[in-house]
Amino acid sequence: MRLEIDLGAIGDNARAVVERCAAHGLRVVGVTKGCCGQPAVARAMLDGGVVMLGDSRLDHVRRMRAAGIAAEMMLLRLPCPSRAEEVVALTEASLNTEPLTVRALSDQAVCRGLTHRVVLMVDVGDRREGVMPDRAVPTAKAFAACPGIELWGVGTNVACLSGVLPSVENSQLLLDVAREVERALGIRLAVVSGGSTATLKLLEQGQLPPGISQLRIGEAILLGTDTAHQRAVPGLRTDAFTLRGEVIELQKKPSRPEGILGRDAMGQQPHFADRGRRWRAIVALGEQDLRTGGLRPWPEGMTIIGASSDHLVVDVTEADPQPAVGSEIAFALDYGAMATGMASMGLQKIVRRERQPGEI
Ligand SMILES: *Cc1c(COP(=O)(O)O)cnc(C)c1O
Image (tube, rainbow, N blue to C red):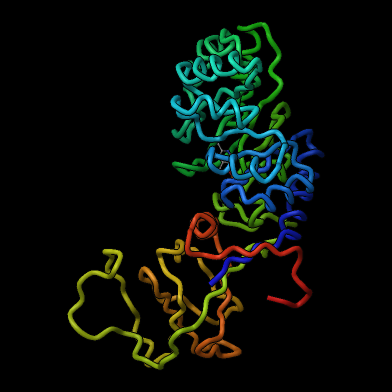
């Protein structure tokens, strides 16, 4: 089994997103966390014109640095105070809310004779990271008082923990906070970092308030999708990632189990409709490899019945052509499947330049 990554699709998507954002005066941070900082993917994003790379984990950043990627990088997850030294050594900027952490970053930056850029995150409704808007000015003052820190801007993140969608109102709230911080501190902020893939929809509709200057985009570039709005982003490619697994059993069986039902391997109680006897393929893949709930067999005509740790069962009765034992079934992936698959030790990852026309 292997996870194939088509760099051509990622480069095309990065270019398209960068162009679309540039037309509205926005710069793009290319977010590599979904592919664990895969260096070839990061390079494809940079070739596509992103101004900076963003990742949530220092391990991923270290992987890209070790591969020789010198581009500016932003740490997206709030830094662990205990890792301040590495944050400053490996990245140019980070998202922050806690003065204690920023003071630790400042101390490390001063030691190294450099300045670390900080974006103050503001919670406009999703209730993950971010200070509440009324805490923005005092927190910004605390950040700006640190000698090794440049208060680079303010930012927000929605559509993650709670699925709150970006809106004109919550984008405007961030802009209001930016202006308030500028007035209170007597400075100009270089960056208003308005959101992620989910914010592209406002941009397409011409509704993103002017003044937002940066978006941090991962999913749209990697997968061409926008999970928050359950859609493919118009004009982007959705074929960058393909999972292939080998068929190890192909048998015709009743579609309902027989016997007294307890719980499955993952502690769930699945339900199966009675569709008579069906051709069922077992693919050598499972929950230990990635989130199988985010897989879609390709081409269409096959359906996933379920998975345990190491076995994925697919109804292939209507598949054309019919798979055989030893042949491979291809799957498209959603964000959860991609992110867990990329982090999985057991899955081989293969980076390809560009697929051939007609190839699946
Ligand atoms: C993951 C993440 C992003 C990118 O989100 P996508 O939906 O992949 O575009 C942006 N900002 C932060 C803080 C993130 O954690």
